[in-house]
Amino acid sequence: MCLGIPGKIVECFEFQGLRMAKVAFGGIVREACLACVPDATVGDYVVVHVGFAISKIDEEEAARTYRLLQEMEQLRESESSDGERTA
Image (cartoon, rainbow, N blue to C red):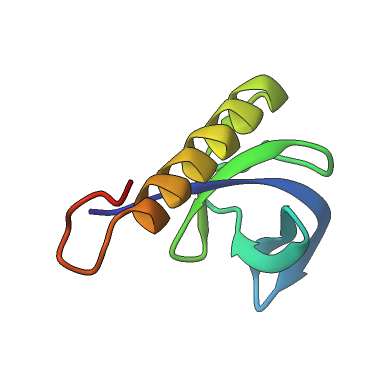
């Protein structure tokens, strides 16, 4: 399964001819290429997959996605190593 994670652009810059950004994911900041979303700018939310921002989303959608990811993590933590849920 491939998963894109929403993040907020905190800085835009150019690197070796590519438009890049520093994107904040919660408390973590990573670099992402903006070639697929050329109109994205500081303050925008983007979905990032393997280092590429692949689409812009609004803040509400980003928050909804974060909540779902947290729920998925809680579900994963509630499963035992053999795949069965614990009480």
